[in-house]
Length: 107
Image 1 (tube, rainbow, N blue to C red):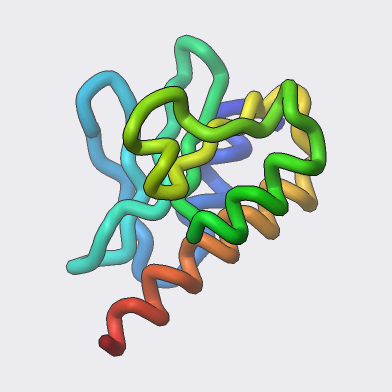
Image 2 (tube, one colour):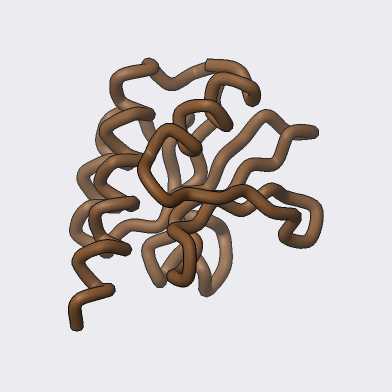
């Protein structure tokens, strides 16, 4: 998956916007929190999961999908090396993170 494909996929979810976030592009549900970020230079994306979901995704390919290497990783933020990840897995991951934002919106 390319960075452009990732951006299109993330923006395909209803009420999602993209905006600059430090050296990344952040994808968030309007009025809610960020569910994914894209770093074009390294061709990686970070996606926010629950710790349980993070552990499942990291089992798919530990070299291509892994926790962010800091306290953000302990909160469920997970790095995907876009060129090494299947499109369907990336779609499923984004959908999971997006749905989590919507679910938490009701609380």
